[in-house]
Length: 306
Image (tube, rainbow, N blue to C red):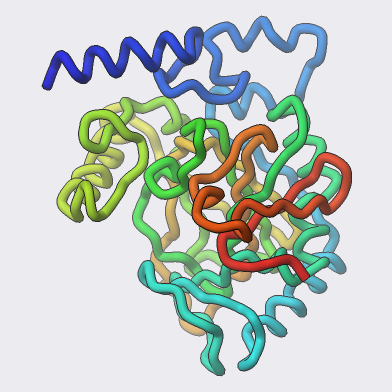
C-alpha cells in the first residue's frame, strides 16, 4: 500500500510540478506565485493566497439581485422546470417552500437575471485574472435559507478533471442577519494538510468510500484547523456583496437560531473553460455549453438552456 501511495504522489508531482499541492491548482497556488504578478499588481491576490478568499462589496446592484429573486420565485412554482436537491436527493419543484439546506439547482439555465448576476463585471474581471482566460460556470445553487452544512472543502463533492482548478462564489441577494445561518469559513484553511479518500483521491464517492470515511474527512478538517490555530469567521454580507473562495477553503453554514429568517443567496462554481466537470461525460446535454457573453460560459448537469 505504501509503495502505491508513493508512486501515485510521484506521478502527480511529475504532472503538476511547482505547486503547493500535489494535485496542482491555479497560478496563485504555485510556490513561486509571488514572482508571477510583478508586472500586474492585483489587489485581491494577497488575501487569496494567504487567506483563501476575497470579498467584493457591492459587486451586484440591488436591482439585479431583485431580478434574480423574482426568477427564483418563478422557478419554485408548481409546473416550473426547477429542480431541488435535499439531502442528496433531487426532485421536481412542488408547491412547498425551500427548507434549510435545500438547493435550487442551476437557476441560470432558465434565468437571464441569474446569468447576468453570476458574471457581473466584478466577477468576470476576477475570474479572467485568476483563470488567465475564459471561465465556465458549471454548478449553481440557490438558497432561500441557510445551508446548515458541516464545515467542509468543496473538493470532496465538486469534481473537475483537474481537482483544484475551480473556485466558488457566494452572492448575497439580501442583507444577512446574524443567526440566519450565515456563511462561516476558516481563513487560511486552504493550506491545511490534505485528506485523501482511499489514499489517493480528493473527491468522496459514497459507494467506494462509505459514510465512515466521509466522517473521518470532516473530523480531519476540524482537527487540522484547531492544530493550526485557525479561527472561524462569519460573512454578515450586505445585499450585492460577492464572496469568492478557494476550492480547499474550509467553510459551511452556521446554525439557524433566528426564527423565520431567510438567507437568500446565489452560489456558483467556476473552472477555467479549458477544464470540465465530471458530469460532462454523462450525457450529450451535460456536454453542452452556453456562451452568455464572449469568454463567459455556462454548463448544467440538469437542464438545457432556455
